[in-house]
Image (cartoon, rainbow, N blue to C red; front, side, top):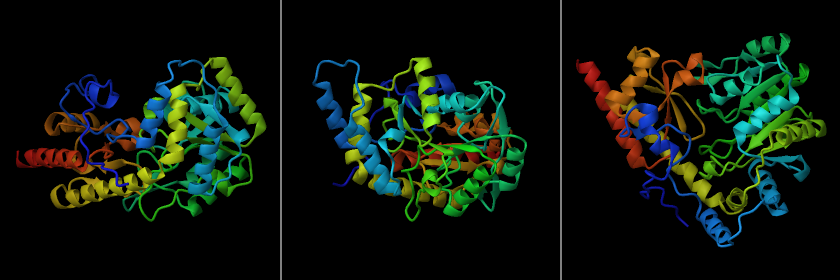
Length: 391
């Protein structure tokens, strides 16, 4: 069945953070919202049908995780990543960010060094610092419009005692889908220095044509990779708040489960469980069509910028529905740049500096919406830039 991703859906007044928090975040409610990392598309029809069917049962009490839910994730990972996951290795979690926090609490001690590779998803920083660990930065470097891992500097971090790395794969916000060679080099370094990698692979399914996500854990026999997975970004069900950790080491699993028990946080929810299983069971065709649509949106932005906004450079990416715009040629400091896009262009994006100091001068653009909206936003930006060029 062909999916209509151009369908108009009014999200305003639906308690959507992306839409209904615009006034609070941007100071005005009429910006085109291209910020929060969820999409403006209907979830797969099978997910909605499953939720409606579950809602017909009038009792919404405490809920177990059925074997069929685990099987859905196991089958999905085997098919999409050739990854043979055992049910015993899966820990269900209330979202990826809480799971990352739980892992840090479980496998490190206060004062331990944890490596983060900016520019990167900003909760990585707070997950380390608010847990009383020492944040160690191993910045990605930009070369010929593409980001890379600085392995020489990463080794120096390891030599200085850092035993944990927070890794983002595919990478948010720069859109890298790491190659097998890069991942192998990362694992070799981690094994040499007995480093544990917490691999956030929440964007694993959002890959452009001719690209392939490689699950990091499939490249090693060592128990030094802990992976976060979720259907939330993939199928636009982030509000359901259910994710999973894949942990091959028994001792680490026990420690992580103990943290969740200490926090008294349960990932058990009758609707999130239903959506989780339905998405992985029946969402594949929807996802394959989505990836093509997002890729076409990206190509449209790329072509538009080259023709109408050469001052802005689109960083080369291979996946996710998030684009990383290099705006440094505009010559604005971070706050001026942020205000420019809000006040002059009327487009709400995430300012790059929140992803780390080396994100200054960049903006993150969410293209997980109708092409019509992407076009409106980019034309507003072009008009605003023409305005400052003429003045």
